[in-house]
Length: 215
Image (cartoon, rainbow, N blue to C red; front, side, top):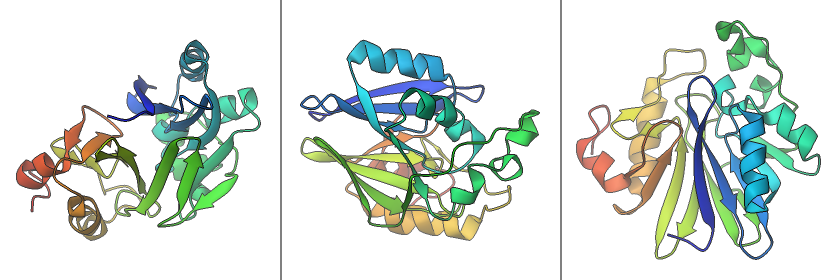
C-alpha cells in the first residue's frame, strides 16, 4: 500500500491494535496506540531495525496508552503525542479508566499536544490529525497517503462493523455519529480503515453496511 511499512500488533488484555509505521529511508518509526506488551513492541521494533521518533495515542483510554511509560523509558528521545482534550487522561487512572481494571496506570505527560489538521512527519511517514470526538473528547484518526490511496488509523471511533462506545465519561453519541458521517465518511470509498480493535475495513464498506452509522 505504501513505501511505509505497516505492522499491526494486537496488545494488552483488550487486544488493542498497535501499529508500527516504519520509514525505509531513515529507519525511524511512529508507534500508534502502544496499549500494552511493551516488551513485544520493543522486540518488534528491534527486529525491524526501527527507532521510534513518535508515540501517538489516538485517545486516552488505558488500553491504548498502557505501554507509554516503558517505551518512553526505552526510547527517551521519542515524542509522546495526544490530542489536547485527552491529555489530562494520561497521568490519571480515574480518567484513563485503568482503575476499572484494578490498576492505577499513570502515563508520562505528552511531549506534543495535537489539534485538528496537525501533521506528524517522520521521514517518509506523514500523518494528518483528524479530530473525531465522540468516544472521548479528544479522539483522533490519523490519515496517511498509501500509494494511490489513503490509510486511516481510526482508533476507537470506527471499527469494521462497529463504532466506539459512548457510555463512559467523555463519550457523546451525537458527536461520534457526526465525526463518522462528516469526517470519516467524507474520505474516498477505497480508503483503508485501520481500527483500534479488530480487522481492517474500507470507508466504502462501512458507509454502506455499518449497522450503527451508515450513509
